[in-house]
Structures are given as structure tokens and as C-alpha cells.
Length: 201
Image 1 (cartoon, one colour):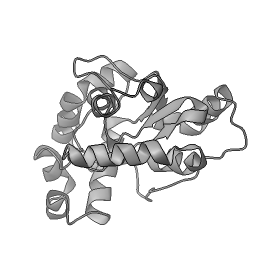
Image 2 (cartoon, rainbow, N blue to C red):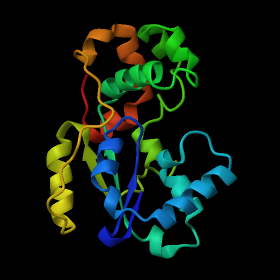
Image 3 (cartoon, rainbow, N blue to C red):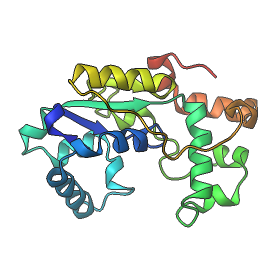
Image 4 (tube, one colour):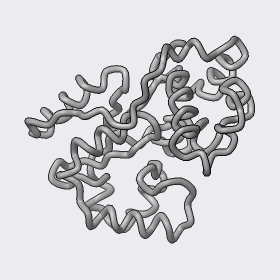
């Protein structure tokens, strides 16, 4: 989401509060640049929704548009074990036709089979340059999203904006779905994020 008045670009990491932030900042977005991104994403035949384009695709699409690529980039990270459970339930309930693995397997088998879609995409890969270096200037956390978002708005001179709750689900503690094997599978896959952001199970 391109937010030129705020001097920001929001890169939406899947199942990490992106719908809430997009709803809160909807009035600030540039419809023109979003249409440009949507068409470019389709032309490149990239997989997944255009709004979840990663940092490298963003730079590729807007490489001749320095007014956009020079904007400050923001993204939200989430505890990988928690996010995996959220992705699994979302795929089962909201987009089962695209994610048969999520609908046909229990959580344990889903994780051990490698998930579906963007389930195993690390934040480091999504927001990075492909070599472990992040290409975003500000990283918010789902675990402190209200506070982080309020601070970001204050920094950008935006007041009176509240963060709605979008695409949330009522479920128990994510830890209850894991056993030793699935916990370690996620730990291995998301080692860069766990190390960078200090997440624990």
C-alpha cells in the first residue's frame, strides 16, 4: 500500500495484521499507484494476491519510479509459531479452494508437509533482499501492534486513527496445537526470524 502523503509504503506480510492496518490507513492510500502495482503484478504472473507483494517485487515493479521507491517502508512481523496456526485456520476457513492441503490435513500433517501458499515464507525473505538483509525501515510487531502503530502515526503526524480488528479468529493458545516435531519444524524454517527478532515458542 502506497501512502505518499505520509511518506510511507506498507508491505503486507500475510497474516500479520495487514488487513487492520490497511483498513486504518485506507483514506491515505494512492489508488493510482495501487492500480499500477496490481497491473504489474498480473503482468509478471506472480503468485498470490498483489497486495502481499514482497520487498523485491515492490522494487522490481517501481524501479523506474523513485518517488515511490524512496518512500519509507513499513511491515509487520509475527511470532512464527503463532502465525503458522493463523495461516492454517485462515486457509481452511476462507480460501479452501486454493489450499486443499490445509483442508485435507490436520495441523500436524500440514506443518510437516510444508504448509501451503505463503505459510512457510519467512519475514526475512518477504521483507528482505534475498541475502538476509531487510529492505524495510520500520518493523512493527503483531504482539505490540496497537502501541507500534500509534507511535508510527505520531511520527508521521497522523492523529485520530484507530486500529480495527480485521480477519481475526477466536481460538485458544497456539501452543496447544504443537508437538515437539512440529515445533522444531517451524523453528528450523523460521530460524532467521527467530534469531533476528528474539521470538520464543
